Length: 190
Image (cartoon, rainbow, N blue to C red; front, side):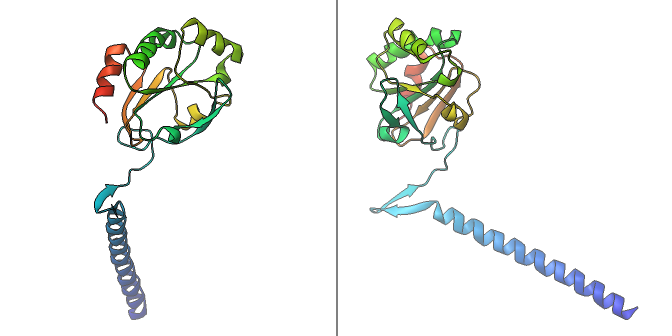
């Protein structure tokens, strides 16, 4: 019996010791992680922002081809305020918001990146015809394989992200936006 008690006590003490070790190592790891969130840059404290799809997170970068056949990426627009809009020609709410997006593009200093879900279109010519019909002058990006819409987990369309000049998501809209709402979101970000 004494041997059984010794073994049980040893196991309990070992488990208790492991729990204390595990707790303190996680706490130190958390402190190190928090300290790592700030770095000194030219005497200023700069916070690193986690990449993600929620307001306050860094918008995920991507590379894509434009309707004109040029390559571009979201990171090309760092330093600019960006309206990242996901749409398709067959989508009635997308059609409804396009005139407001064109007006917004003409009246405000914002970069509009309109990502067409080309993988859902019958043909690319439909996108060209849509651009001409609505007289759109902002960049149309072609998501041919739906890679970007998958990266951004797009459902429903249109979906719009308002991204500030540092690449941080400041607003996310599910569904069509009107001109007044676009301006309101634009004016609330840097």
